[in-house]
Each structure stands twice: as structure tokens, then as C-alpha cells.
Amino acid sequence: MSPLLHRCIKQFINLSRQSSQIKPSAEVFERIPPYFQLSNGFNKENEKSASDLIQSMVVYEDFISDTEEKSILDEIEPYLKNLRYEFDHWDDAIHGYRETERLKWSSENTKILDRVRNLAFPPNVAQLKYVHILDLDKKGFIKPHIDAIRFCGDTIAGLSLLSNSIMRLVHDKNKDLSADIFLKRRSLYVMKDTARFDYTHEILSNEFSKFKDQLIIKDRRVSIICRNEPKPENKL
Ligand code: OGA
Ligand code: MN
Image 1 (cartoon, helix red, strand yellow):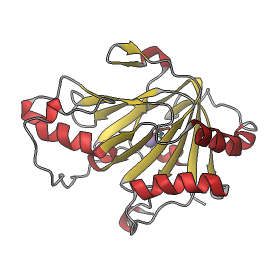
Image 2 (cartoon, protein in one colour):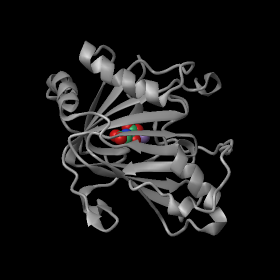
Image 3 (tube, protein in one colour):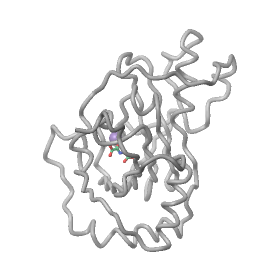
């Protein structure tokens, strides 16, 4: 079984990434998706970075219905209930959380997860079989980190249950390049390539949880995260 992933995510990396094939477009700043807010560090000179970031972090709002959200929660709540939220380890990447991993799902929930997997991963990509379940308390938050390349591949797909929240992406080498992403309750995000490798990601605490100047109250939030296998040469 793979270790719980968050223990290993503090490793920061320096990889030269293959740049995206899509040509930068003059209109990139006019076509920013509504769930995206780019920092002022993005300008005409680094338009290509903005365009690559937008393409590598995509949010699908209303990816699951109320009923599907409930169905997933009904299956995992009995396990989560037995775990205590961890608040005390300030060196942890995550504050105010409990987590587990799950291999076997009900047939109804398997269908939902298959929809996630089919959207996020091409058929030839080897996926981690365990689904990571991260339950953040209302007071919980995730500090900036990059998921370890030893433990997971180039794509991270996450369903957000129970609450809206804000994910912040900050370029690991140039803090002026950052973006806030509105993760709506019941949305799916698919983070890959430059967003996954070159930017740290974090979930803001309620204190800082704003989007386009609007306060976004983060309640208890449960994320359901599918990942793919790391490249063989990155494994131990
Ligand atoms: C993680 C992580 C994000 C989320 O567990 O490494 O970044 O959506 N989670 O919960
Ligand atoms: Mn992460």
C-alpha cells in the first residue's frame, strides 16, 4: 500500500518542463476562466506562462450532483468519524485534517470515480489504485507544497465536497506569478504539468479565503483525490 501522501509532499523540485504545444494568444488575458484569478505579476511578457497555467489547472463546476456528493460521503463518513483531526503538528503541510485512503468503493461511487479518472487520465496512464480522502476541518488549511514526484505522477484530480474553498498556486521560482482558484463545492479540478510541477498549491484558511474581493467561507471540506503513478525513474 502506498504511504499516505501528504507526508511526502514537502519536497520542492526543480524540473525543466516541456512547454505546452499551444501557441500563446494575445487574448489570453481576455479568456481567463471565471474560477481563475491571476496575480498582477502576469503581463504581456509572460503571457505564455499565464496561458500554460490556465491550461494545466482546469475546474469543472457541478461535476457531481447533490445526490452523488451524499453517496460518497455516506460511504466514507463511518471511517472518517473514527479519526481525530490533527491540529498540533505545525511542521505538517496540512493543519486541521484527517485523512484516509480507499481502494474498494460501492458500485455507485465507483461510477463517479470512473468519470473522474476517465476525464483526468488518458487510457494508457497507470493510476494509483487508492483514492486519497482528505477531510479538512473548518479551521483547517493546506500550506504551500508541491506533491512529491516520488509518489505521484503528472496529474492530480480532486473532487471538493461540502464546501467552497480557494486554492492558491504560486510559482516556485517567481512568487510574483500566482493565481487563486475558486474550488466550488461539488466541482472537480484537474491539475497537471506546469500547475502541478512548477507552482506550489495550498488551500487558504478562512482568514485569507477571498476570491475577487469576495469573502469565501470555507466550512468543513472533504476532498477525494485521484492520482497517477510516478514515472518509474522517480520511484525509489
Ligand atoms: C494534497 C492536496 C488538495 C485538496 O493532499 O496534497 O494538495 O484539494 N490536497 O485537498
Ligand atoms: Mn498537494
